Image (cartoon, rainbow, N blue to C red; front, side, top):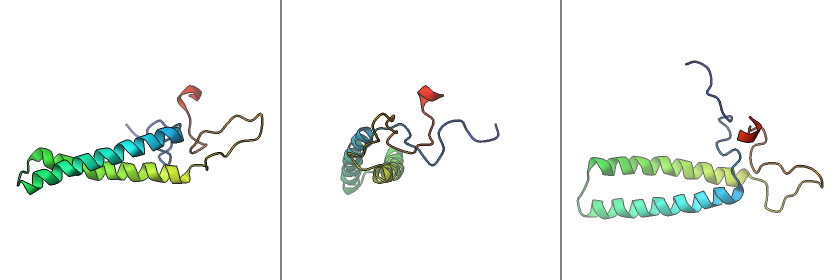
Length: 104
């Protein structure tokens, strides 16, 4: 297959995601990373290391990158309480050029 994959632009991985959902995912992922890090640290102190631990370590790096992307999306979002003029349809919380499933 050649050419770009269908879907939202690569610059907007969270198109259509509400700020509330982004904040929920940020909290959940932060707690998940902390739990897994504590687990891996306990195993390391006991001298236990398996291929599964290596996968979990790699997952930690990938999840950290995802958490950074979520935090960047939150930082770029319009401030809370920002409203649009009366009668205008409220814009989505993130990148306005994204196509949403109901518009496809």
